[in-house]
Image 1 (cartoon, rainbow over the protein chains, first blue to last red):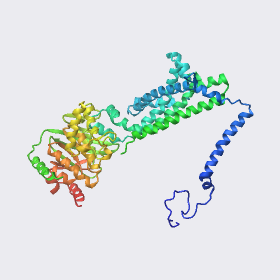
Image 2: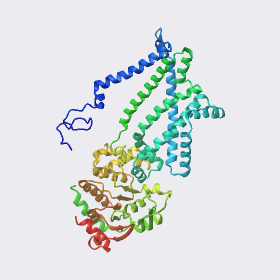
Image 3: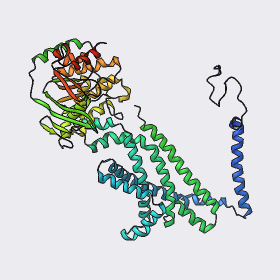
Amino acid sequence: MTPRSTTTSRPIAGPGPAATPRPMTLQNWLDARPVAIALYLAIMAAICWSSYVGAQRMGYNWQWYQVPDYLFTITDDRFRWGEIAVGLVATVGLSLASFALAMALGLLVAMLRLSGLVVGTAVAVGYLELIRNIPLLVLLYLFYYVLGPIFALDRWAAAVLTLGVFHAALISEIFRAGINAVAQGQWEAAASIGMSRAQAYRWIVLPQSIRFMLPPLTGEFIALIKSSAIVSVIAVAELTTVGRNIISDTFMSFEIWFTVAAVYLGLTLILSVAVSRLEKRYAVDH
Amino acid sequence: MAAKQPIIRFVTSLRKQTMPGEAIITARNIDKFFGEFKALDDVSLTVRRGERVVVCGPSGSGKSTLIRCFNGLESHDGGHLTVEGQELYAGSPEIRALRQHVGMVFQQFNLFPHLSVLENLTIGPMKVRKLSRAEAEATARKYLERVHIPEQADKKPAQLSGGQQQRVAIARSLCMEPRVMLFDEPTSALDPEMIGEVLDVMVELAGTGMTMVVVTHEMGFARKVADTMVFMEQGRIVETSPPDVFFTNPKSARARLFLDQILEH
């Protein structure tokens, strides 16, 4: 062992005695701030430039100036939301409705699984395996083309049911893990003051498991927003469908798909930030 | 702290006067298995109203399992167990109603960390006994006073010391107005300097005539408060004696050895 040098508070950058200057290994050189920034910009520029050049070579007619009209228009002091904005609202509405259904169903399945009843566990596990092993697109077709005519479901109902049922399977596992993460002693304490199992869930266990569930539930909601794009195949008028419709009218496929992707990205990023704030509120120190 | 000595004297005199009441807990030949392991082996014990029973013995001897059976947190596999006139068995529907009369204090406190101290005390009375918030809070403040921490009502459990948390846990049980209190090693998880404040509260509680079954290694407490000492080993009750007999001249060699081991420090 080399004797400890005086500069022990230096952040650990790699092996080697601390007193000597950092050796110019490739990793150290790449991690130096100016090099890293320059490299990052160079990579981004290369991607943009190559797409631009590729588009030029195929004679693509860029029409970015048209895109803002699809977000909103202002004519004679009148403000109107554009088609993409309306599609975004539809996507948010569809996602919220599906997520609410998925939460309710997920909680039910998780409780069946945790009930300790043989029937409950069998139903829950059966549901889980069934949903996990069918592609989302096939599930959508089942709901729209098979169950739709039988139960008179319109395309919106089929979309909400498909997304809700699909994500409920994953959400039930999040609930189960969150409930199991609450210490056994909490159940016992609740029981010892005469609470029923339902009361213990409602007042003691679920409020505590929220902080275990919030991060994965956010992830699941973001996944749901993204997978909601799939309902464009049954022409539910949400963001992706709107994008497709605009393109079939204008042939601006590059601009519109970039815009649609940016709108999804913005939506999910905002959600992540909002939930990380919420998590701080539910943090309980033990 | 200053009130400690008079209370103990009061308790001691009280004990001498109290006549044994009717049986509250009657265990007859109960057995309990965890898989292959026999945690309770043919245990019989009667606890009468107003009686203070202290259960001791080496770890793994079945003490905790026994008192957890008394409020149905564990179900016994053989024999008969009657609590407050109710025969208990696995899944008996009366268990919930019964638990309202049988308070339990845990080694790890098991306070509800997401609720304030006051809410910890009121949630049982409000949700289970259906008291109004005002009634529940009045009861809660009365018992917080009783355990000497009325000023901590609005804090979260994590902000309290271990001793304070355990006193809150005692108050939480008392808010259900139980007829028996079970204590499962209430001071084992505490730092030494906090054991005294919890034992003081328990001694005071004994002074009110509460029926208590206490699993503990605190032999000083046992000497002061116990009417009956129970010594367990390997799932069996080896000895049941009054404390003056148990501490001076235990009948069983096992109890004598156990006492020598824990009292020599």
